[in-house]
Image 1 (cartoon, rainbow, N blue to C red):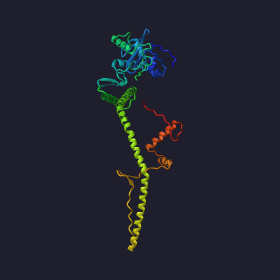
Image 2 (image 1 turned 45 degrees about the horizontal axis):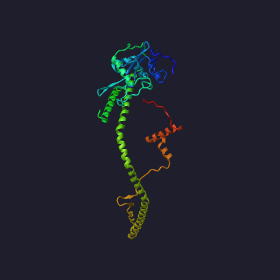
Image 3 (image 1 turned 90 degrees about the vertical axis):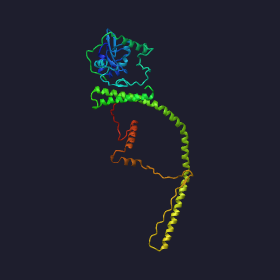
Image 4 (image 1 turned 180 degrees about the vertical axis):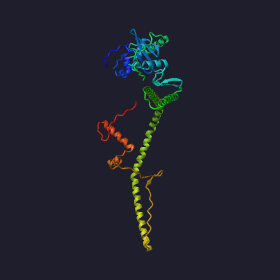
Length: 389
C-alpha cells in the first residue's frame, strides 16, 4: 500500500491510475467505496463514460455526458475506478458514441460493441452490485430507487457545473422469440458477425500497435463469451436427450449384460469339449495319413518300376464344432505376446530416432506425472511457454 495521501479533488490519483492501471488492482492506489477521485473512467458492464470532479467540495458526476445526482454518482465509483481513461477517449465516447478502442457492429438492427459483455442472463434478472455498494439494508437506497433518481437527473438535463478539462492528460489507457432455435440463430449470427470484424482487423497481418491490439483482444473476449453462451445453450438442448438416452440405457443395460455374460459363459463351457474333439480329429487324420502312406508304398512294390510312387494325399481336414442352430467351434487368431519390454523400447528408439506419435505422447505424459511427483526423469525437462489467454 502507498503512504501517499491523495485529495479527491486533485488530478494526481487519476493520472497515476491512467499511467499504470495495475496500481488500482493491486492496492497501490487506495480505493474507498463511494469516495470518487477526480478523473475520467468507463463503467464495467455497460461501458459508459464517467467523469468525476469537485466544485467547492461538492462531488459532480456525468455519466454518458449527462449529470446525475451526487448519491448516484458515488454509487458508481466502484464500478469504474479500475478502468481510467484519457480525457480524449472520454470525449470521443460522449461525442461520437464509440470508444477509440472498440469495434461496433449492427446485429438484427441493434448496435453491439466489442467492449461490452455478451448478455447471457434474462432481461429481468437483477445484476449484482459490487461488494458493499448499493445493497439495501447497508445505509444505501435500493437499486430501483437510484435508477429513478438517475432518470430524473437526466430528464432535468442540467449540471451544477461544466465538465472539467485537466491541465495535463497523460496518455490514453483505452484499453427469436420462438424459443431455442431462434436463440441459436441469434448466437450464430453474432459469432459470424464478430468473425467478419476480426477478419477485417487481421486482413493486413497481426496487430503491431496498441489500439489495434486492444480491438483484437476485445473481439477475442467477445467471441469467448459467445462460445460460453452457445455451449450453455448446447448443453440445455442436449440434456433432455441425454437423460432420455440414459433412461433407455438404464432399462436395457442389465438385460444386455445378462445376455452377453451368459453367452460368454456358454462359450467358455464348450472350450474343453471342443479341444477334446479337435484332438480326436487330429489323431484320426494322423492315422488316416499313415494308412494312405503305407498303401502307396505297397502299390509301388507291385509295379516293379523305378518310378517313385506318387505322394499320398493327406486326409481331408474336419474342424471340430457343435451346435444345431449355428456352428460353434475353435478358431485361430494372432496375438502379440511381449517377452521383453526393454527390447521393444530399445528397438522403437534405436539410433535416437523420434518415436511414433502414440509412443511419444505416452512417454511425455508418464514423464510429466513423475516430474510433478518430484521424481527426476532422465531425458525430460520442464519448460515455461507463453500463450495468449
